[in-house]
Length: 93
Image (cartoon, rainbow, N blue to C red):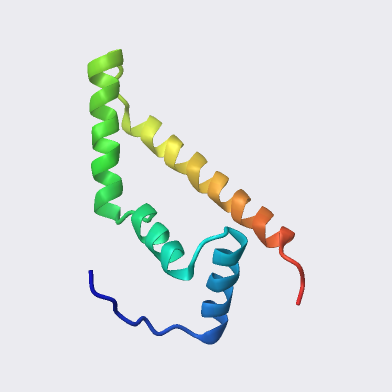
């Protein structure tokens, strides 16, 4: 695998380096983890479609559009709450 250089502001690099250090890993490994865990909208849709198929096949439950919309809303709320909690936990400069 060949390496490439990604240019980011120094503050972003420093933050990523601090996160990597706190996790006991390298900046390279952190970026690989982020890339592996971050899904594109198409990948998210594919995963949702597979999940719907499993629910229908194994449990006989067809997920309605209303249920899907409600789950998306709850996930957005949970994500926002998590980010707010992280922001509150960060020390002030």
